[in-house]
Length: 307
Image 1 (cartoon, rainbow, N blue to C red):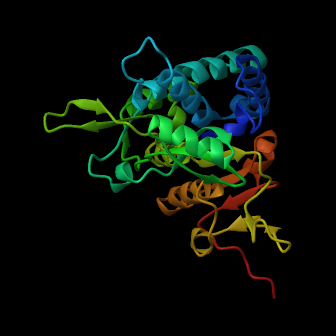
Image 2 (image 1 turned 180 degrees about the vertical axis):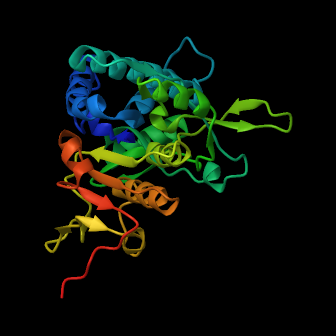
Image 3 (image 1 turned 30 degrees about the vertical axis):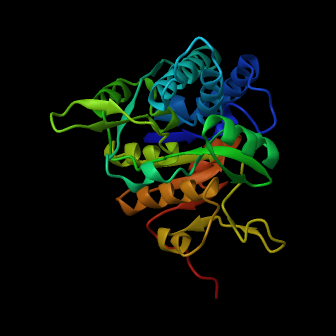
């Protein structure tokens, strides 16, 4: 089977942890251990988030006295792709003995996408409200509440195409695990002459994963995170896991925009575009999530009603 796997931010850095390289590498090694059984049996295309990492680099470059202006987000996105792609390819080789290649990936977005004027994507570390507002005033940021904390938000346009798609397909067909589309891919727009230019934004990696899965005609899309399953009534005393769902049923519910919402949307998009199976669940249960023994399975077949 050809499977697109989207790793959540917890695969690299958990909330509250210091963003040291050693801590992140340990998480990546654990991710490689979880993916190894799948990679030995199937052809994997792996994508990953970069929110904490790109936010950290943005904070550092904004305060660097050697620069006349901070690095733009397309450049920072490319930097994080190289770093995280290296870690993942290295871990898959060392921990699982599997060939892996990291592909610097550009994602085409529309220049007229209204999301470019409406920052909504969380990046970087968490702050208390006072600190977040002080940093926003000093650096010209926009900030928003993210659960009980506050974080910076940046534009997140819709992914329209993946520039390196033919190369990704070629490498995957060779039997090599591909790490690509990191952080949703470096956002670029095309001008009237077909020239590509970077955009000051961060694309949602789950939506890029869904686009990749559809374009590659993948057999499955796995969205792996630190949550056991999608929940109905999440955050309430009546919360219960949704084990099997049809896109229409999930679309009728509301999920948090900064966390589960994009994952549910990506799973639905893939199935609605003709995909046979999308699933959301814990990274360490990757094989069970694919088999439908854990997590939430989304398929074109509506679950049977209990009489």
